[in-house]
Structure formats: structure tokens, C-alpha cells
Image (cartoon, one colour):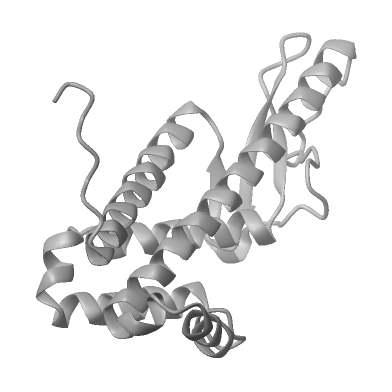
Length: 199
């Protein structure tokens, strides 16, 4: 189904029915619906919070590479935040583009950031935008009395089933990207990596 033909639900947690479909909202299904609503809101919150952390790490890398003196100076860091990093013209997309260009020109960043870092950051930004701006809907699956509700993130990019496969796949991307950026920040700041517990 093309993105243009998608019907965006009018509200978050809406139960969306295909033409001719029906739902039998008995006590069991209502309880499942309430639980899944809570779960999806927790997922949304976790994703948005993790994206905030990732964007913050991205900010630190840009500062360390471009203006290392500002990174060690509170006044300089505050000014850079106000004029660039947190300003109205600097989006997450812009920061990713800046990092892409820095990585292509700064050999040290090439060694700190694997080639797929930019691709992963772009995927994270797109998912963050979807969760920030679009609702999660529920679609009935199966027949009464055994119907269940399938959680769907529905955005202009498409329909995404929020199942264990989706969460595991994206969880790995979020986790590895966060770890990569965090390690890069420490290296750029000259922080020695922590010794492993088995060392």
C-alpha cells in the first residue's frame, strides 16, 4: 500500500477497522486494549527519550571536532548551544548531515564511526519523527471471541506493526548507535575506556 493511500487515524490508540471488518469489544478485549495502550505509550516514551540521548551525543561529537575549546568552556558551550545546536535552524537531520560531512573529511571520525552510523542515525530520526507526530492505532485480528488487537504505527512512511520483531530490530539499532556515539565522545574527549570486569 502506498503512503498516499494510508488513512491516518484521528487519535492515538484508535481502533481502526478495514471496510467490512468488525470488532467485538468484550471485557477481555477491552482489558487487552487498555494494556496495549499503556505498553505503546511506554514504547513511545522510551524511543523519544533514547533519541534525545543520541542527539545529545551527536551534539558533543560535533562540538569536539569543530570547536574543542568551546567543549571545555561552559560559556563557550552555552553560546554554541544557543546559536547552533539548540537553535531553531538546526534540526536532527542537519546535525546528521554535518556528521556525514565531518566523517568524510576527518580521518579520526572514520575510525571511530563505522560506515553504517549515518544510515542508522537516519533510521532513528525517521522513527523518532513517526512516534513524535503520528498515532498508534489498533487493528482487530482474528475472529470473536478470540480476536486480538494488532498495534500499528501509521505514518506517511507506511504502517509498522509494533511486534517483538520490530522492537528487537530497532532496539539493536538504537543500542549499537548509542554505544558507538558514546564511545566516540569519550575518545574525542580523551577519556580512557573503562577496564572490563574480567581484566
